[in-house]
Amino acid sequence: MLAEQITPPVWLSPLLRVLQTGPLPLPLERQACWRLLHRWQAEVVLPLLAEALPEHVQALLTLQRLHQRAGLGLRGRVGEWRAALRPVLLPAFRRAYDAEAAYAQAYESALDYGQAPSNQAMIAGQFGDAEAFARYYAQLSTEANAQAFATANAAASSEVAARAYANADEQACASVVGALARVCSWACATSTEQRMAPATHLAAGLQRLASQTHQHASGREAWINTD
Image (cartoon, rainbow, N blue to C red; front, side, top):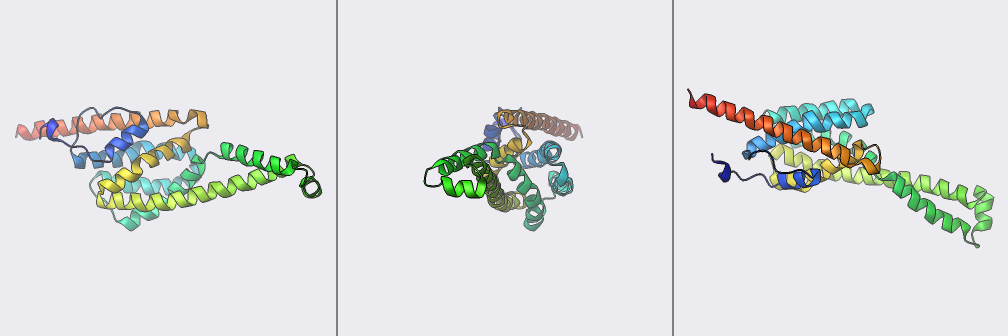
């Protein structure tokens, strides 16, 4: 098939955009793109997540095996994917949550409340001062919001990604692949200022595997043509 006849899957553009990387070295057929996506997850994304989430290594290995199988053409069932994705995405979303910014916002709001003249006596009696109340409230608020954020997003993303992977559903994949790449990048960053460093690593891994995939396909085609 000529390169100009190859139309990339609709999920590829959102993924490249989130990773802030250019087009793949050369166009790949749709099935090759799906295999590339699963290889990238198994060989680049999940090993990086394992460094950030070492306490969840068993869940990561289970998901990695599914991606390895899918990279060989064995897509698996929706239920398998859902069961494997959820235990990984829940802590990933939890770690990706910007707790520092959420805490700061909650702290300022609580401090204003505690310093209001009408509240000072009550705050002093229960917490000692407004700053102690603000710290207490900000901690509770941040933890509750982070858990709610992770639970809701992990549940929704697991369902969509499971259907995408099991059925090779391009539209479903397009709706979630960029967001999941972003979550992985944020979860693996050491600070909010360093979130692009993991994305750069993920982008380089995708481009490297794409080059290998094309070289393998070219070598196979040359071998067939000489038969």
